[in-house]
Image (spheres, rainbow, N blue to C red):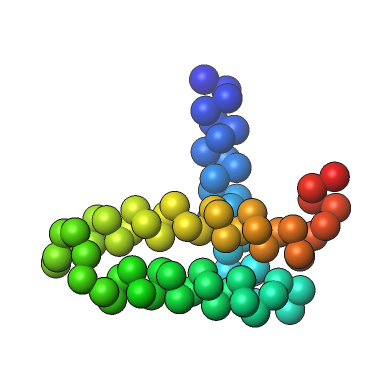
Length: 81
């Protein structure tokens, strides 16, 4: 039970850190552009369930932690040690 709580806590911290990573000058512009471009394109282009944004939200929730983990490597190199 305690392990699942830590997992949700870690996931929540990744979601909360995403806006800070997008505005950080230390994170490369290419990484920010890739993240924002992928999310925007996924929301705009035709998808599997038209007019039902559940898959769009799921995709965004999967990509946010990925982006945050990648961006933290540039923003806080001590985080990995």
